[in-house]
Length: 564
Ligand code: F6P
Image (cartoon, rainbow, N blue to C red):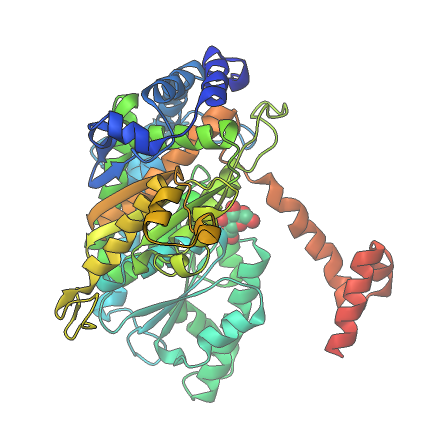
């Protein structure tokens, strides 16, 4: 049975501390010149500054006491050891084993986990090398130029996010595209300009039972057959078609029997295990498309980055443990400061899919109303995560973060060395000097935003600029808007692994405090089932239509009319 966090001594103290807390980042920094230093931590290559959060030493100490009272370290150790902490599915939670060095054996439920991971990874790497070297060819003997990953949720968001983030590491002449949506536009657009003889599809699905993925896989297979026949590359025969699938389709799944039923040779399938949740699987064989794109060495570097953050989480004292501190801060804002959302703002264009990736990681994990023993939660859980890369967000929604009525904690993430270090040769003759380093200008925005959010601008400062009195309030910035700043040397595969693992563990910490199972996702099932029940009504089954509620029936009817 989970500890009910709200009954702990620390929870009572935090409630009291929050009631008496008047956030004052200006005052706190003025009174404590070492605040930035004391609240900044290093986790692997990540420099993490927590000092602009709305906490005092006492609040932080009490949050750490809460972690102690809910048994965070015991739960963490149980996860690493492979105990079945995914209670509702009776499974171990071992994504950390995917990046565990092979010389650190781990046996769970009688399975040699480390050995199995190493064997499967070797298969993925060998396949990646074959594609990259041109040894793997399509039906006409052409090498692969485009890999199309077909998957959704964790079988899409991780690979696409990482592919975009690591674009400078992608082999020249290779491209990966990602098809996820069952909207037929997705597969149609992504295949429209492709040469079938140089295209390889990877069907990625943990269960190999997901409607969207299997439908898209069939559409892609059909496109492949049609276009290869049209190009005269295969005979329009069973033999021609099965040869095309053998050379242009591979799969990633835990359900290898279903892969075979689809027509893909199990020899061309890469497996993983039920103890890897979909949203925690980018570093399993689900990352095969990425391994092809960036190559085994870079993929191994990614895994090493994950592991470095795992080790930080597993071994660092809690008061310097970044995922623990960031998870506890999220609890503080959600449960004691009435925050409902959390912004993630990468100041790195290549991380533009990172917020979308985090949405599944955090919200599918912690969007729960019952605890792991089935009893109702005792407090709010699961913030809404959202975000866009800076500086785009500045010109869109930052207004609300700066001057709105809602508290929105925000994580700012940047790397110091850009992949494309351009200079502005000409400048603008005013604010931007000729020869200016554009990345420096970019990061000046990061530093300016976090500063403005923390310290704001007082009415007197506005007046001192000569602003008319009636405009002073509109131009005042209240400040005390909390941010965490994360800086890394460069967006290497290792740093990306560290970042992803950081958020995995933050999510875990919050789940432990709330007493929930962060590794199941029953909330997605009802809609999937209803879609299958409704589908006949959409295509004309009148009895199925009559069985719908009036609103749904009217919408389906209107859709049918509009389609006609
Ligand atoms: O519907 C949610 C979900 O089960 C996710 O948890 C998962 O990542 C996604 O669907 C895709 O599932 P699969 O990899 O089995 O196709």
